[in-house]
Figure (cartoon, rainbow, N blue to C red):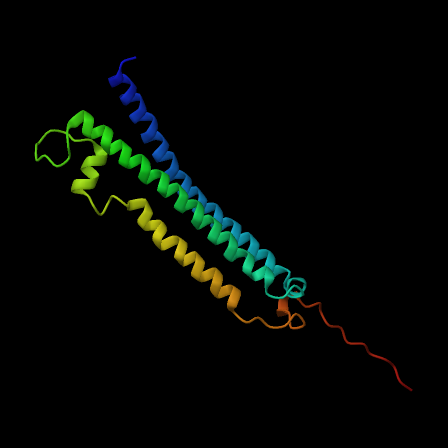
Length: 167
């Protein structure tokens, strides 16, 4: 294997890795939403028992959302590093991206030069998604809730009237 074949194979592997990371960020977002929905469903369905623990159970989703956001940030940093290196590899194959020539320059170079808005495409959606999730989970955690003795009406046991026969 000569140097050119090595760099071509390296390019393929790094490109596949970057695409895998993009998919993983979307999977992280999806699973975080599912986990939050399941957890909030548990909290609201066990209203009286959950209230015995005070505000702590309501702050757990905030921690989950922060962890998901940090995971996505780490993935995007890896994507950015891969993209920068791929751009350098493309520069060695096609020449520098600063030259104004009609020849192909490679996707990473084209994207950085011609599509600056696209450069952070997946990152842009996460820049909206994660802060929105953080705001919602913090809002839910800070929202005052009625005390445990005032459970929602659908969780109360049916009341029966006791009739006694008095002389």
